[in-house]
Image (cartoon, rainbow, N blue to C red; front, side):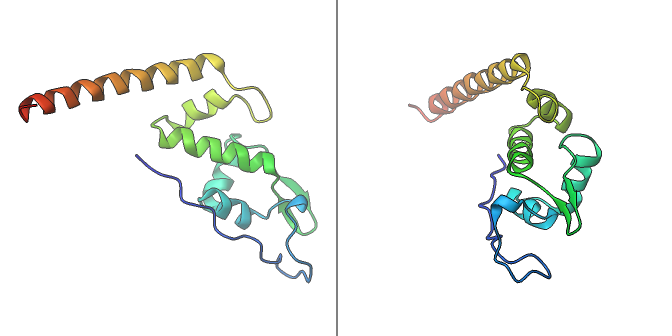
Length: 131
């Protein structure tokens, strides 16, 4: 199973800024991607596909919010669990919208089925080991 790596330190100053980083101001694409453990290319791809809302555009560049990061992390978690990107996006619902309860229940059932299957495989291995 894929594990999500811990978030790197993104508290460095913004390029060209003398002020320290302030999360309330949002995140640059580079900071957002690093926090989510992905690449700027992937983040742009997700925005282009409509999986993540467009960032706020400012004179300093695009600014990603906490909501962007939460959605990005949830997409990564669901795909790490084996969902396709399209299924993960469907489970979360549209950006800014509500998640799909039906799809999440289906995912929960699939996981329960996998647990049952793994438990059965472990019982067979125990039998083969003589236990």
